[in-house]
Image (cartoon, rainbow, N blue to C red; front, side, top):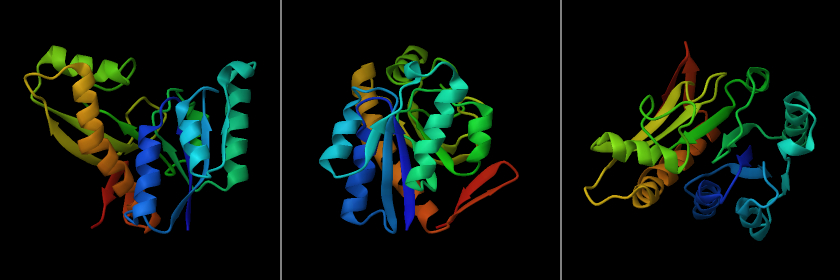
Length: 208
């Protein structure tokens, strides 16, 4: 049974997608061991509570420095026995040392087709604003392993979404979530649970 540690900062829509797919049987041999929020008021915590999932907040502002914050975060993950760490709308940039500790066991969902519209400053609605400003016709979402850079880790899975002429940043954000994020993140988690993801030479492959 794969034990997930899900890190969140906001509403938790991707967390809900994971919960729903475990409930429907699309994700098997997997359980959410803990949900950890970087904000006390993150709605994702309520989603966890309503589903009987252990949850807590580990807020950076409570700590004197990043090192002590990450030590507390790692302690909470280790105590819960988290085997795969899922960044599901987690807005904190983790240090290289933290990532190294969990190398090959941290994944992130990003709302674009990396390497487009990613990196520093590209998160949340800002991504979709940039997509529309640039006038591209195809966007989407990416699940990738986390490394010491920002959105630079090995890509595991991507799914494309058409950009419509009438799109606003908000409508595009919603469609990318519904058509891409909520599909590929559960698929990758399920593949990880069944040892179908291979990571070698800084490239990731997902077996059918």
